[in-house]
Image (cartoon, rainbow, N blue to C red; front, side, top):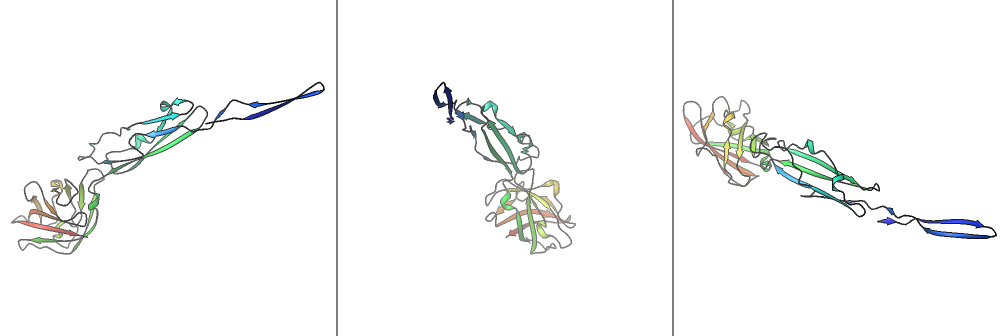
Length: 238
């Protein structure tokens, strides 16, 4: 919007006086508009393999001014290079633009990179039921934390509660976050203590999860102590 500036001039001409009034050139006081395609908040899931997400691609933006017209080419973007789609976290990208009169507008966009299995993170009471007489301890406290780099991957401490001599972390991969989602135990970290090792998921290739996420879930799996194998169920309850 332009603002008119009133001016006056007073002149003495001989024995008379002349007063002049008028308006100067209008002044532009309206800031340009700046719009972000996709909105000011975007949520992106982590990749299923570490480092597999590539780089952030801005969905776009536009800037218009009532005097200068389309000034999208004048928009300055900062923070985009810091967005890491391969690591969980919140990243802010800032956009700013000014018109020829110096009026400016700034807008921020937050990119949230998330692990979809975040609902499983937290503390649980856990116990393991076994069909044989292996040494098992019930009522352990288990903590679950989601991976910072791989989607749906959850680290479980005290997995299986096989004995009381220490804590044994193992990773589980949720194919989805709803109750009944299939899971896979990470074969790169099979050991769950000196007396037991997960050798095969039961049924083959997947675990069986039941319960209502995120308050409870069960994992059915097969394991061995080097002599005999056993099908067991680990129960996690908040």
